[in-house]
Length: 531
Ligand code: FB9
Image (cartoon, rainbow, N blue to C red; front, side, top):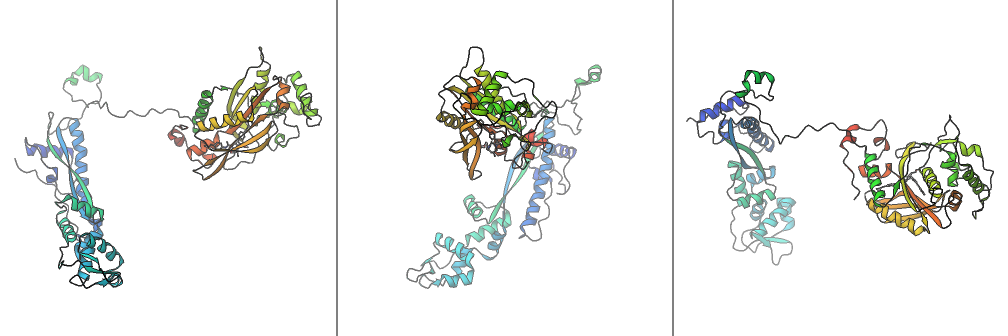
């Protein structure tokens, strides 16, 4: 059978044409698809790397186009094909330079006076050959024992005694590769590659034979079995497209958890692992009583004014505050009551305490839950409780602060709880977030004494980051609730937004929360796994 007709390199193959070539080649098929296409013209300037690249790319693109058809024809069992690699090498610009004017080591050898005694100083050689050629040439000439440091003359080089002439094998190899694109000795090619004098070029080519369903006509494959086919019986003869059970399914368009909620899940798992129960936080609007007064926050405290707190216009006042508990809180504020405290010494206002607000912290929920803990049937039982939900602060918004954020809070109520327990709990908690090496700085909260700000060194940011706040709840808060003597309560809190921004590398909170965030980022946001 005749050699298949070659097409010009710039006319891409079609499936029909490919079948005709296979048919023309007969039973043995097409041994080498490179024979099917003419070579693109060699670039005029063989030393111009770019046009050589282009030459190679044209040959490779033609075979790639053919591969596309071969794959779909093979899927129809019309042909079978094997892929093969053609590995060739091309000279880099520096490689061309050496092929043209010799290797650095050969030029150094040539520059050195004949015989082994005469020497030339490095400065002379540098002027003559240039620093780069001398540096590379010296290394290679020494390695090839063509030259050496002159034994007597300091800083001078001489030919190796007895080496009268050398063969510039590097240049010769490069000239061979320039001519044929290959070199027998693979090791020498690797040396040339290491010297960045040649680059490898890979081209895929194919050998093609007829398949069981070979034909010159490409029938449109049926992709569905239709009622008509069943009635007409056409299903018996019509070729069907094979099911590709390995095909990737279409990614179902599913909802995606917002990164904040992914981190919230991580925190919830940490708390559950530590035996905490979740507090109900479904009450954004709370009375100033639970948000502030039950926490022994004085009614004049700055945190309570319009600057920091959103007050509800209507209804403006809470209806239900436990009277007996309110009177005890009042006493605690006014004169410390019977709780061993001086109190704040001001007249407690019922109006102020009834004012409804958007909670500024979930510690308001902790207060309500601790009160419930103290007054539940069967009396107080130790408890570990946590909350993660929105809190609202009428603060200046900036790149890391919005008028609302999610507070993460943990409280532990038990007999003889100490500051040590607080520090212990935080070390375990943050360690589960992968945050270790904590530092604690004394701080102030109206409802905890002592209070500690928590810091951790963030190697990524290269600085100590404030990662939360904490403290031992004051007796002026706990005793009025009715918690038994000896029961102490520790608490700590942080935000959900900060760790989420750090985990996802987000610097501006508006890229995390709000109408400006990109939905696709949310969909693509990887799951978070605290280490
Ligand atoms: O989250 C905060 N920082 C943080 C937390 C984790 C984190 O993770 C990295 C992977 C390591 C990085 C940073 N902060 C608390 C510290 C600061 O960001 C602070 O400037 C802002 N704070 C918020 C309040 O802003 C007015 C974060 C929020 C905060 C502050 C205090 C509490 C809760 C949230 C509390 C409390 C508390 C105290 C005692 C008893 C019970 C609760």
